[in-house]
Amino acid sequence: MEDLETIIGLEIHCQLNTKSKMFCSCSTDFRDNEPNTHTCPVCLGLPGSMPMVNKRAIEFALKVGKALNCTIRDESEFSRKNYFYPDLNKAYQITQYDKPLAEWGKLLIDGDNGEKEVRITRIHLEEDPGRSVHMGTTDRGKYTLVDYNRAGIPLIEIVTEPDLRSPKEARKFLNKLRATLEYLNVFDSEKEGSLRVDANISLKGSERVEVKNISSYKGVEKALTFEVTRQRNLLRRGQIVTRETRHFVEARGVTTSSRSKEEENDYRYFPEPDLLPLRVASWVDAIELPELPDARRERFISQYGVSPEHAKTLTGGLKLAEFYETVASEDPALAATWTADYLLGELNYRDFSIDAMPSDLFRELLTLIKSDTITDKSAVEILRLILDAVKDGKKPERPQEIVSRLGLAKTSGDQVTAMIQEVIAEQQAAIDDYYAGKMQALNFLVGQVMKKCRGRADPGHLNTLLKEILDKKV
Ligand SMILES: [Zn+2]
Image (cartoon, rainbow, N blue to C red; front, side, top):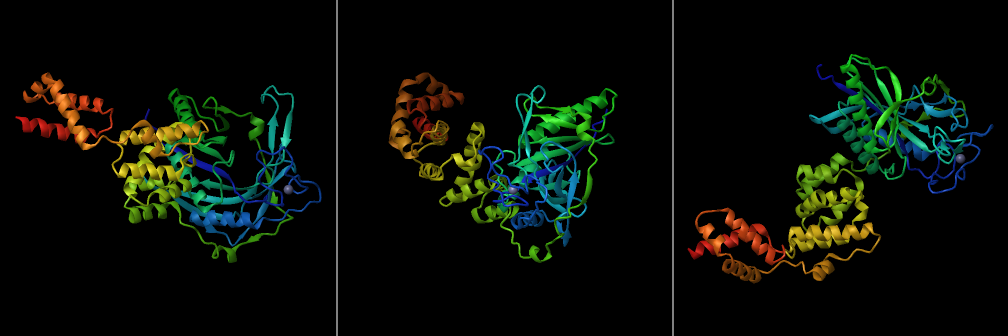
């Protein structure tokens, strides 16, 4: 069977990090608080309560619309989306329907075959529903509690055209989107549940399956990869893919079919009678965008002489880009290599964010590398010791202290020469082999010197030096 093209579209819900909720003045800072402590008659949906639009939420959504190159509608409208669900206290959700705030945008990503434009269908504003808390497991719990602290948190829903062609492209799109939202300072990606994704996926010519409520970045690629394989296998066996809604079970890395009653929603939308249409034309021009990831990447290349690959990595998150700029001053190229190639590797390995690395300690480490005080190998060792201390909740030692304590300072030129002479005196057999033209004898001798100085010399330099000394002796 020929390889069928994979077609993916995403719907992304992002919580905007405003101080108060979408239609009332309740605080959005509810995490780590008791359930139902951030509520009022409006977000509890009590009869007679009137919603008031949060101006800041609209500004944030407009920023996103502009940053994603959308056309902003002069007039958009809120609607009621009617459905019954335990955590939807009013039995309707205020959202936007046929007149969304922004439409027809695009985001450039680094696609499977080079740079690629992913079209944005629409961006609209809505309120988050509350949250059901199942006591015990979902299946066997005796009862469910409802927490309305989340009800009314402002969300934007970003809908893409089905332009993505692989789970990897979907991940790259989300990474770029997340970076863009971070740069705009409208979204906090580290807050639990701040981004949720529904993905539509089909293989060309087949029915479309919707995977709902994927709540982690890594989850999206996993869920989509599972779906692609599942659908391919069905078709390979001559079966058909049914149009359905599925859920991603993060712990098992699989998608499972949802019960049909959950998917047979027939929303009755009608205009929200308590809110006037939004007329934003006069605001749009006044909204200034900050420097966005692509612009920052270009600036890193021109201002710091960073390679395009490093520039892309270093601008992939706002905090990372800011971290790089605080350590770049002395030697931008060295800082780029050590941040992008070494530090990020160690952070990923420990599942740490860039916050884990104190920038002053990293700067000090860079100075030690630049001044040739330590070898790259020792620098990595120091980096690991610092991050291990952070992991254990201890105050990390300064790099200079670690160098002194462990005696990591590079062996001086004279010491190296002395050690080479010792090795030459000790390893007559290898020396004979070298003069007989066996080049691997040289590697052996370098190894012996490295052993003597406990790795605190540069192997490339040693190799040259040793060769010089041996060749002079002939
Ligand atoms: Zn409220």
